[in-house]
Amino acid sequence: MATVRPLGRIARLGSGICRNHRFFLNRSPQRRGIASCVDPAHGLTDEQREFQKVAFDFAANEMAPHMAEWDQKELFPVETMRKAAQLGFGGIYVQPDVGGSGLSRLDTSVIFEALSTGCVSTTAYISIHNMCAWMIDTFGNTEQREKFCPQLCSMEKFASYCLTEPGSGSDAASLLTTAQLKGDHYILNGSKAFISGGGDTDVYVVMCRTGGKGAKGISCLVVEKGTPGLHFGKKEKKMGWNSQPTRAVIFEDCAVPVTNRLGEEGQGFNIAMKGLNGGRINIASCSLGAAHASVQLARDHLLVRKQFGETLSNNQFLQFKLAEMATKLVASRLLVREAATALQENRPDAVSLCAMAKLFVTDECFNICNQALQMHGGYGYLKDYAVQQFVRDIRVHQILEGTNEVMRMIISRNLLTESS
Image 1 (cartoon, rainbow, N blue to C red):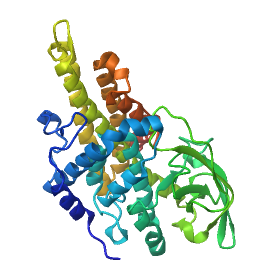
Image 2 (image 1 turned 60 degrees about the vertical axis):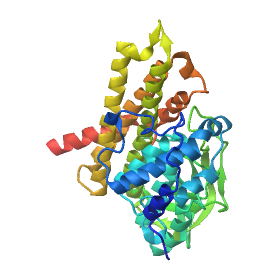
Image 3 (image 1 turned 135 degrees about the vertical axis):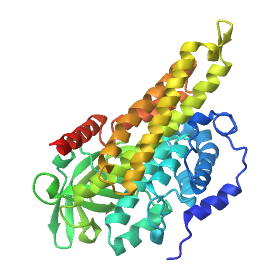
């Protein structure tokens, strides 16, 4: 298969985009004079700065103008995401031989942070899609990679990750969905809950029980939309993340070919957890983008809003709050990038750092966005102002990809095990 390295496509496209691109208030973060101390380009290579710029451009031109509409009308922006895929954002860390960009985990974090400034909900779905594509690329055989990855990387087809069940969330190893082997097919029965893209997507990466109790009895199957016995629940009404549909995914005697199993029987839980390590960095990166945008929105509001005869920017309490927000943003970014590098290098501390990044960054970035809303006063509560959507969209980041309570368990377990 002849492929073009997407980074090359990004660089070419980036050079052709108007440099006076919109970013919420009609100018890029750089051109709006955002303080250099929170500049997300610090420490990046020239190549990384180039595709970061293209991601910011795409967020400003293709996502931010539609963010509120997608949220209010609950639209799944398929065509916009396919435009993102043309830049290489459909399979960012998938290998190039099957259509991926072949970029690093750090590169991926930079891209997701930038895209999230335009729409957190849409970017978060793209991050889940990327995780699924990577799982097939990494654990699939040649035939599986060639069958699924090219259409996922182009976003001709979309993917969903199916682990959580109505009765097993944080305790994922207790899942009950079964897959019984009959001839050359598995007969799948059970249901999955809170599935992003469920019903609108084409490929479902499903964790199911092929053996006994516990993690070692779990396998991973790729289920294609249209398979008899595959059904979907009603579309859930959510507080945020409204540009991506969420439904239950239901299996009733659903026959899935053995050839759609990733890896061997019993490897599914390990596959799921390895996917989630990267997913935690991805979702933390999406929180960074929301916080980055919210700091800018708060800053601009303080500079123009007057109370008691002077702008709010002259209020020392708000100055200190803004300083704290900026400090927490930069600290969060550094932790995410360290975790991304550790995962890319397969370091022993990678799992714990991914958990730390997810825990710290999703908590702190939510607080940043929430404080930015408070600084807007009553205006922040209006849907005409983007800050309230950032608050709603990133609240769920403290829950999914493993709750932040589970992140604490992972980190403490690592500490206590190493010291014993």
